[in-house]
Length: 463
Image (cartoon, rainbow, N blue to C red):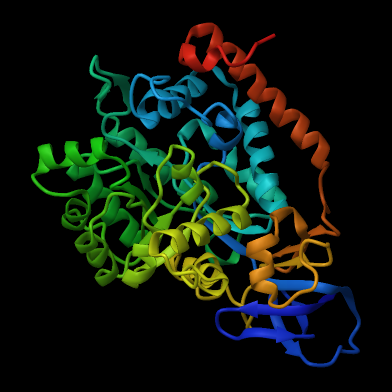
């Protein structure tokens, strides 16, 4: 049966803002956009103060990390960690999780994170994860999320901290094992445009992957038409390691390994120079920017520079809040304060980044748009609450005053996944209970083993 969505407003980057449209959805696509309500036999959802947009695309995420580090990685005082947060907390605790958690427990925690994404307006995401988190794929598909799984590849997979607080990569060469895992995952789960699940490559970074592995990833991804997501210029230790080993910056090194081109998404580029950002733009690659992930460590991502440069830009949550409305608001505020221009980082510009531009980065012009023939991945926010009213401009109202939980309807592949703010298929409360219990057990065991730095462990009592 057809579905008709009738919001007060609709917006996409291609068509701009419309008032009182009626969207007809059939066979997983937008079949028509009408000025008058159609008379055909159809299921209908009308929302008098609704704003319909393309589904939000989270272009850089680590879903499992969100519940694992929730609160644990916040408000960290100087001296509480023996080194950079990535190398002294995030990655070591991730290593421990891979050792002690059963696949079902990992799946429960991942599913809780994915539920939060879906219920706040994300319809598609690129997620980078460790092989032990393979339950991500079936759990996401069961919820109806469209995903690009980009498991890590490593040459040196294990991380320790040196006495001076710098990272020390060690262990046997994991190039073949990590590469082969992605290839097997692709063969098992990749569905392409006609399905919800896609699989690509996620080389962790230019410092932890050898040039040979990076070139191997590039060759395979080109042949398979797969997306590549790689962290780049995300911290000074990575940049120093690449320069010491390769005699060049991280962006240039990736370019020389074939990984600066369409279909490649560079995570963060926090420390990229203007010249390096221009290299990314000229190569038609994409930067995925995650404002809140860096802000919680006291750093402001250079989003004003990204926006001014003309580089294709996507927005990700980096496994922090998972609410893309929160992330877009943070991006807007940073752009305004960095540029001292109140018009920078406008609602229209950032929503374009999170819809059409991210879809283009993924090679999917059938997503991120509200046009006839586009895939029906759409969300409808309810702007009836007092914090929105009266509405001067619905896009600005959403990003200035809104929250992701004001989602009323979520549709992916033409199917209703959320209606009236409630999950249509599945027990949301049960998903949350299972996921929270899994993380509570990990926290307790990590504290017992001393895997959580003492200054952080002392801030919470464990049963």
